[in-house]
Image (cartoon, rainbow, N blue to C red; front, side):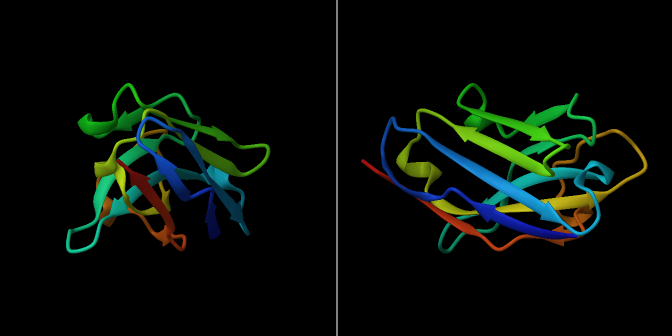
Length: 125
């Protein structure tokens, strides 16, 4: 599967952005999906994950209540709605797909098999 991330940009603190990840190739409904981010000089970190069916989601504590991850398997897309953005959310965001037989989500980046190119999110104070 090929993943194409989009929706990044520059926004002021308190603003919103919506990241999308479009999957091509094998249908995305076969995959659990996740978003990770990496800021300059820092390691890549988990942001949010969703199960194949969409019924299970996980978020890193720092984004809970602000970010919402959803998926549309008919359109082979996952969307990360980011509200009340903070300067510390500034990073390159990556979507990833995980092959799994289970309808579960994972926060572990090493369990993901396919990665999209990153999309830059910059939040100004």
